[in-house]
Length: 346
Image (cartoon, rainbow, N blue to C red; front, side):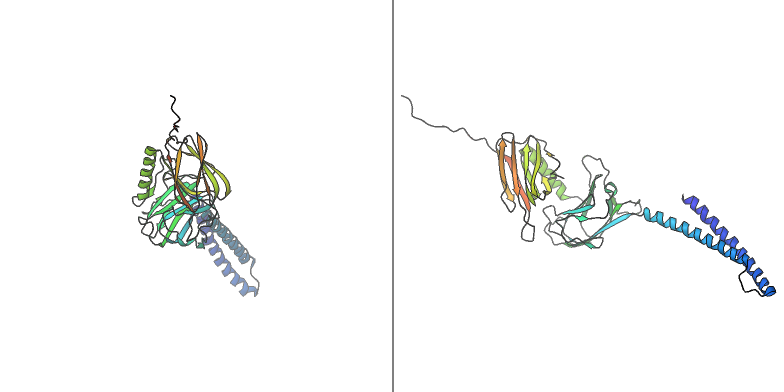
């Protein structure tokens, strides 16, 4: 296509050169005609040459316009997030961005997306397009933090890690390639998302992530002890139901749980997908311990094969109130049979 356009432009340039010669000849002829006849009007030959020139410029302008339109259509769409941050995760899904402080970091401040203020980080930020998640990647970063990207065909995650979770937020900006990505082999620091379909998902990083190792250790320990830790942001009312080796969520009112982790592993879309554990849940005599959360969490046995853990919290988060909940469920001891001592028969 480019070769064809080059040939077209070359032909137009040659035509312009020929027209210049024609105009010169016409000008000379015009002056001769004016001298002989004293005519004040533009000769027909010069008018025709001028009209031809206008057509050439029109075609040339059309060709350049087509090139510009094609360039605009194929232009990569980038996205820049700025503000002050300690750490956390930006999750791109559909045409929205969600933020999670991973329940360990302080909330960011003054966050903007392409210059537009993200006023409420508890609500998704809406984009005007759906990114090419599997091709997304980091183009630029400007803060001394570890950056990680992970992606599938339907979502993209940018995680910013900090070894001191409670440290004060610092200024940062991150520029991402979001749609119609171009090759970036010339950028030494470019980090694309890992290939889709890897098992387990790989994470691109600028350094070791201490939280990945911590989560893996927690997962392995939970298998040994048959315990289950649920950590989630609760903004509504509902229950987690335990049966067999699966956990499902039954929604009742308000928002669905967010940033849900089971034994350190993320559970996306609990409202539509079950979470599978590598062991059978002890359902006959479960014991619950709540270590975090504003309201009490209730465990209710349905039968010996099923129980549920009920959450209810619709209060808006603030600097003084956190909607983060953490509960741990362990296998309990079976109750000992009751022995009644009666009178001895003689």
